[in-house]
Image (cartoon, rainbow, N blue to C red; front, side, top):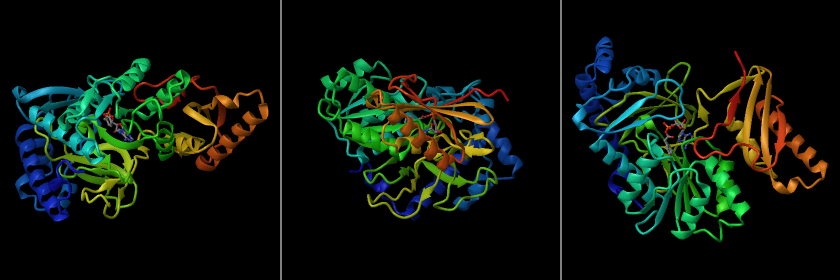
Length: 430
Ligand code: DLL
């Protein structure tokens, strides 16, 4: 199903023409109205009206998170304040936040992209959508809400947490779809189990939209099996409206990134040079439709690859693979570079492993992986636990080349996560 078939299946040449037109108009706007960009373009002697093709984007300067912080609160605004109707800030950072300002048209545009995503996965009017993401400065709540309303869904603005109430709402209103972080979906599964509610029989769910934090294919499979639903990966970041930047279609083979709104590049994080299709690189995005706060060549820090080839769903917007991590997620133990995603991939594929885990870094040479395991394994037979502990340790060693200390815990022993999970606790003082 399509929300806007014409734009979702536009020819690549038509799309590129549209992108060039929008890029030029974005650049003209920031060159006129945003001193930060005007200075940068002037130094590089770039004239927006002289840009002839999309490849020339590579001559433009990058925008970094630090640039956003340095220009807090209004430095990157391209319109006067009377055109600005909303503020979102980015989550999970320390120090000065990044402010993202929206005009009325930007809010509409963001909602439209969400509508595209939801309809793409089969959502229709008269379905019930329970939004378990935080409402407020975080974009996961409000931006998704506006898009779901635009489709005509009944939206329950439940917000995160309050697990008992979430369950009653899902039961009473027969929610068909939930918007949830993967870590909360796993925690909710634990609570449902404790309460004796079978998500496959006692709930009415068909779909979950999961994003806002990285997770693996194994975690998706686990959640799909527990709830008996389809889980769709959803990627976005506050700096680019929040959710709705890239989203899976029913093929579930990569996320379509909406290229009429975002110009997509993949760069090598070390050399800053372009990365070919199929190879991993850092996602760099340029807004093409933003009115209040256009951003060019934004270094998202997220690592992914462009999936080559056409998608069977008929959409022409290219697909990006599941994010494998962030350039700044990586940690080093015994000189080896490790991404938390590698650990999750191994853990979630092992029989007996439960729903939550945490990595603690105690020194440059030591890491501990705390893993919740299935309740039945605490049956008094020590052999089972020792075998499982050895399996986990060896499989992790094969993957990351470092033998971690593995602690097995009972379900619920680790702190539950209602928003974005904190998977790595770095106790090292360097
Ligand atoms: O997390 C927006 C969002 C809300 C996306 C709801 C999807 C669903 P921020 O708080 O600014 O915005 O965090 C953005 O989260 O740069 C990624 O590192 C990470 N992230 C978001 N979605 C995914 C995903 C929202 N599906 C940062 N897979 C991004 C992996 C993700 N990482």
